[in-house]
Length: 229
Image 1 (cartoon, rainbow, N blue to C red):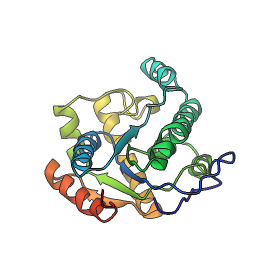
Image 2: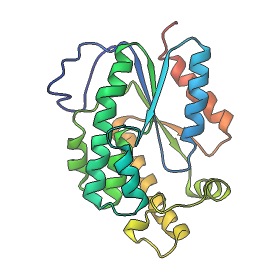
Image 3: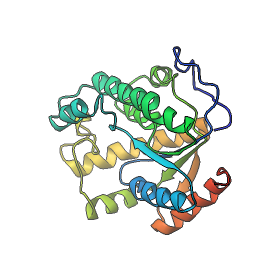
């Protein structure tokens, strides 16, 4: 990251002059294959001789226990969930992402604040308010949007971990069963991500294809960013 840039005022109590590392974000809907690509990219970058750190939603030690407990009990209201995730993101950014970038690491982020805003918007939140909340967020060096159509997502979820309450948007009562609710919720998320891809300049990758094809595309783009180790 040659120039430090934020989406808003940044951290008002931190003066960040330079971050020699590189922030790479993978975005996309549930079941699109982000975790698989994260693992492949980490291994590849480390094999190339780069120091790598990875992060993702709900990994803050400050908020993870409470957030996981609230989600498991299906007790989160929309605003509470939004602020919980914002706190999680802020803690990870300040205490994990920024220090790693300062040390010259290549930071892989499984989702960023874009996912939180997209999900909040689908749940009826004000998209402008959501964007303003994350004015402290660093602008990544590159954001990949792994985009798969609904049929692909359904097939992968059905043959994988299955459908769950939150990934199906059951709190929104789109339908009275996980499958139908998943279809409605994820379709709306795809529409929201498509809008954000244009707004934020995401690099859209066709994730309907086999894992290795997606991986090779990601590597081709990242090679343009990496510095010799």
